[in-house]
Every structure is written in structure tokens, then in C-alpha cells.
Image 1 (cartoon, rainbow, N blue to C red):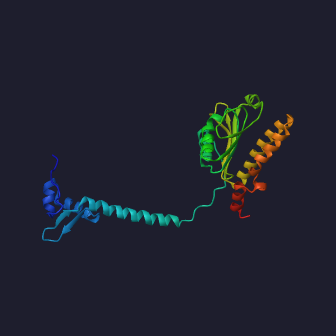
Image 2: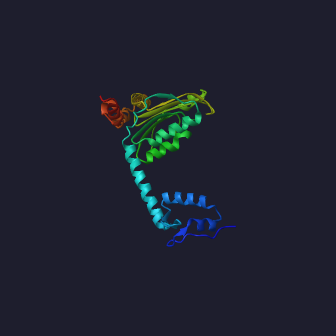
Image 3: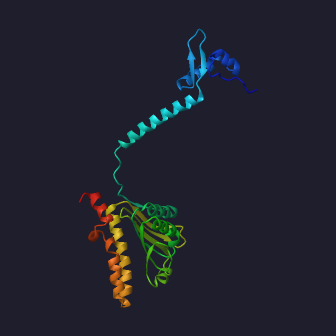
Length: 264
């Protein structure tokens, strides 16, 4: 039978009356009331038979909120004082296909200024949405492709007649460098169920090296195409439009991060 006993917000009730009202032993009730008192839920009045009164629920919640806020502020101050761990510059081998794809998408999603990538046809559907979304938020995204695809906001470099070449291979490969701070390079089986080889790292040195490798691969593809077709003006335009991407000559964000990381 459900008890109908309730505290009065003004009256003080003896512990034995409370026990009787809820059909519980007085000793157990007293322990519970003592615990509630420590938590601010009840107050007691000194008398021959100790009496208890319930604290108004608004006051109770306000007191708990203040304690929570104070605890949160103290915790925040303590966390701020903790020395942050150094950048993990280890190179990690990734052996799970799902993890490879998730890592690549995470890196693209975290990019703030620049993404350079080289993506084979079968790998593009895995990353295309993340690349377009990065471009939409203002990240400069440049991708070398092997078949003509439309990626809104993304600058694409097409390796002409590239698709038939990759159709002869039994792998699906891609590489990406993001902000010159992290990179991933992967080779998957044709059905994308097995990792042949995949590595990812936040090494700034390796990331800048990968950034430069992908950049020069894109430039060579464009320049070779234009020179072969005697389109020298277009070749000059490509060089001018990509000047800011060269880490050493332009001293862009990739190179600045490199210098800051190694204090050079």
C-alpha cells in the first residue's frame, strides 16, 4: 500500500512519526534523514525527540546548483593547469577498412585551411561528401582525380585517361594531407573490405612532405597536359594560381606550422 505521508514545509515532525507514516523502522528512517540532512534536503530541530522538516524544493535545487557550479569551476581551473601532452608524431598503421575511411573523413572535417588529396575513382565516393562540405565552410580543397567528376567548390585536377589505368589494378588507393598537420595514405582491396596498407600520422614533417608530394603530383598532371597541347598560357596560369600552396616559397600556413612545431 502506497504511503500518503508527506513532510510539511513548516512543521517539524519526529522521526518516529515519519517511520510510522511510511511503515519503516525508526532506526532506518533516522539514518536516511541524517543522510538527507547532510545533502541539504531536511533540517532538524533540537528537542527531546529529534524532529525534522523538509527544505523547500526551490531552495534545495538552488543550493545544489550553486555547489555544482562551484565544483565545475574548480574542475575547469584544475584542467586548465594541466600541461597538455605534446603532439603525437608517431606514424600508425591502420588495419581496418572502416577505420581507414573514418580517419580520412575526420581529418577532412577537422581541416581549417587546406586539403590536398589524390583519389582513385573507386575511393572517391567514400570521401566526396566530406570534401564538398570542407569546401563549403571555406577550406581550400584541391583533388587529383582519374575520371571526370563534379565536386562543387572543390578544385579538381584530372589525370586524363587515368580511369582505364586503375581498372587494371586490384586495389583502391587514396592519399590526403590536411593543413600540413596530419595525413593519411591508404591502399584497399578492390571490394574495399581489406586493408592492403594504410598509414596515418600527425607528424608535421611528414604531413608537409605529403602535402608537397600531392601538390607537385597535381601540378605535373596539369602542366604535362597543357604543354602537350601547346597551351602555355594555361600552364602559366596554373603556376600563378598555385604559388601560394608551395610551403617553402610562399611560407604559407603549412610552412608556418612546420617552423612553429620544430622551433626553426
